[in-house]
Image 1 (cartoon, helix red, strand yellow):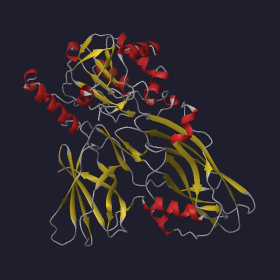
Image 2 (cartoon, rainbow over the protein chains, first blue to last red):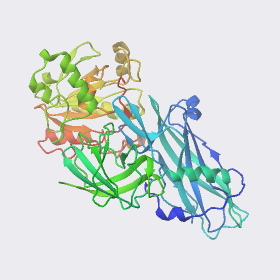
Image 3 (tube, each protein chain N blue to C red):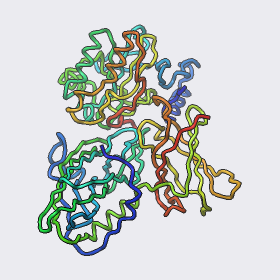
Image 4 (cartoon, helix red, strand yellow):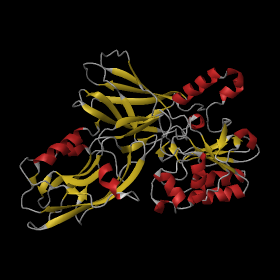
Length: 301
Length: 213
């Protein structure tokens, strides 16, 4: 099972930039029981990385690339009202260590009364990989991943691929400038720690959660188009609007309340709320990240 | 207690009531949307056999509602493996009324004319009591049916005792049926034995129901 949380230490990793050979491989197989003419068209799947050669003991970023055809989408971790999150199973050689996968913030797709969370554009699911120190320069290593997804427009079509990427081992790493830029752009859309923002959540009635969102510093204005995406499905009414109001704050700091509707037929009220808070204007004071990650108790009144 | 589903569904239900006020009493409105441990909303739909099926006619029996779209890969998983038909047969044989419902709107995936559906259900050896069409999505919206499949179990008193997924393995893979915990079987077996239903509500998985926009 892939995980959701982007490791904080990752931002510290630095990558030199130089011209290198692209290291993309194409899907070798796609689709479960789908007609062959649909395979290529719906989702292009490949493994990509930000290096064209790796060094013993070195660290690089590896990503599963899923590019849905125009009008189609693949899902986020929580697919919303319907669908299925893509699955990634890394098959790395002995001694390689993969970190957690980072999931860029999703879009919302309305489908009648339903709302789906996902991606209509190229999705890069990035992870940081550390190579073992005993690799021999001049050899090559094969990185593999079993990937599955559900592509939907009005219809849904499952797909799967066994992806493979061969990388040469060199005495010094050779970065790939083009993929470094695209992978960095994907990582910039991954949730960041809440930073200067503190969030609490409480039930105001049997159907509504009030999330109090405060900044430790002054901010220019309220964040725009705020939406809370829970990591788990079935927690909130995905199609219900979420309303942000400005709270009076005696300290002069920014304080807001986001009103979120609980799922009407939820099995129970969850003890904690975990997920991401997304704003189209970014969370100022926190590198203007588009999404911040929260995991807070859900207080009863 | 949680008593409402989609705001959209509620708004639609309200709009429908306003157009036919004489047909509905105040008591009906209170139950206009489905909720666990509450009386399931009554409905009347036409089967592909041409007969009319009214939920309240089945008082005294367990009723299963199964949302369906034969072209959805999640539905194909449960029909291609025979899993769904085996469940239907087992419980229909035990006296349960099993209603398979399609809320696909005209022109949308899974919408078929009754004659086509008769062929399709025969090919698949459908073993439910009836296959009902809900092309305007009214019943689907009242029940908050989001996915195909989406399963509901109603007890002999007409109370909704289970709503959610068919099992605990959200996937389109046939391999996942074996070893999955089937919530419909678990809730029916428990309720029919006079025991409490362990999981009354789960998150359904599947394709979105192809409602009209």
